[in-house]
Length: 167
Image (cartoon, rainbow, N blue to C red; front, side, top):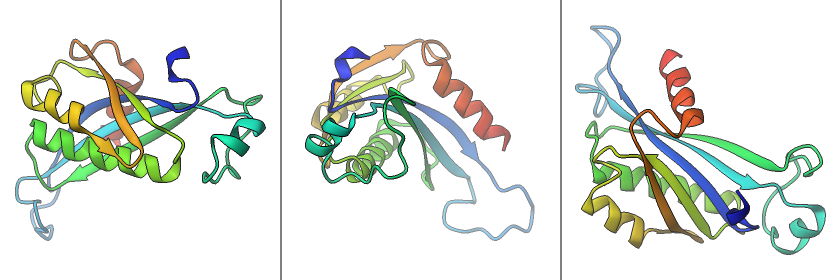
C-alpha cells in the first residue's frame, strides 16, 4: 500500500460470470439471447489530507469523502456489464479501459494502476499482457500486474463477486 503514494491506485479485478434471462418471455434485448458478461473491480486509493487535496487532488469533488482521520484509504467498487458473453482478453481490456477511464474522470490526480488478478487466460495471456502495457485510460496507466491462482489472493474482490451474484 505504501507504493501507491498520492497518485496510485490498487486495482483488484475479476470476472463475475454470465447473467442469463430469468423468464421465458423476457424481452430479448441486445445480447440477452446468450446472456451478459459481468466484470468487477475493487479500487483502493489513498485518502488525501486537506493540504494534499488542495495541491495534488485539484479537480476532484471531495465534498462527500471524509478526511483521512476517518479513513486512510478509500474503496471504490465497480461492475461492468457487457453484452459480449466471452471471457477473453478483448472483453477484459474493454472492461479495464472503461473502469480506469471513469476512475480517471472522478479522480484526475491518479496516474498509476497496480492491478491484481488471477491466472485465468483472459487476464494472463500474451494479448492481455500487451493490453496492460498499452493501456492509457485518461490519466491512468498500468504500472504493474500481479497474478494469483484462481480463487486465491484477492479475497475481498472474490467475496464482492459472490455477494453480487446472490443479488
